[in-house]
Image (cartoon, rainbow, N blue to C red):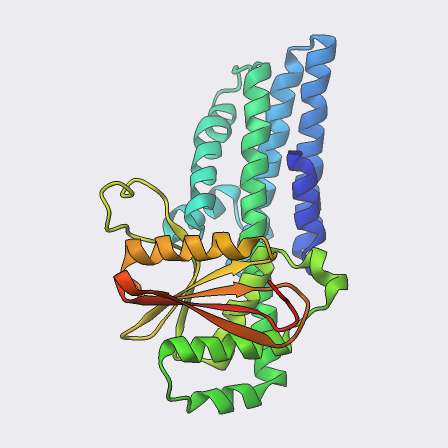
Amino acid sequence: MDLLDILRSKIDSLEDGDHLPGLKAVLLHIETASRHLLRGQKQNEETAFTDSIYRTNQAFEGSLKEAYRVLASKDPERERPYDIEQYFEKNKVFRQRVLAQFTNYRTEWRNPSSHDYKLDFDENEAFLAIVSVSAFACLVLDQISECLSYNKTKLETETKHSDIKTRLSSYEGSILDLTVELLKEFSRQHWTGSNESARQTEAKIIGALSGFFASAAPNLEVRSEVKLTSNSSIDSRKLLIVDLIVSNKKEQVIIELKRSKQGYRSGLLQLEHYMRQSNIPWGILYIYLYKSGELDINQHLLTEINSRILALTPSEWIR
């Protein structure tokens, strides 16, 4: 697994905007940090490892600035790096996984190297810093991508598809049925075609779904990357994170997103596990395959827990 290749592909998949130059600079800093590491290894230059970490610090700071630009909708150039870090620490903007990497890099590398000018780092520390900041940047990019996709789709739905909101505002079915109708509409309106499939990351699709729901069904609450509370003492320490939960004041539906035929069976098993652990009785497996604007619905009953899963698949897809 090449973290730099993953980082490049995530940046390449983003929409154009003011965030792109800064994120490309983040990539350049990590690439340079990697070259410093290789120089230290090949030429026995001990100072190269410290140089590497100074570059990863720049990548860390740049990632935070561009996250601040997109997630907080504020200009990072007017803020001190310390204030940006404090903003993310206090306002719970980062998701659980992003926050964990943020805290790890800040504690292990950023703070020691910033506050002790006499500190030297060795080869292993430089390697770990590169891996740590790369992981942080990749996860930040996913949250940035989701936010951009959310904003774009919400605006498009409000301006171009107002009839959807009108048609669904009076829908009288259950939240499960309403969510299915929304996903069917989303599939019709946002089918990209196979030429765009490589650019449609999971983060972008989840962001687009959330933005579409926010515009078409504003009375529903949609949360992405939700950490579930397990009912089982066995699973109490495991991190159970679902793609989406749609809810109103009384009911909830779990949505699991998959982007391949191979994800069908594993998606059903994941949903069943989530539903057993959370006592949420309804789940939807949504297969997004870029093949068709229409969806077929297949029902899977879980009679022992009085629950059911609806699998939504492209109508041209034969399992």
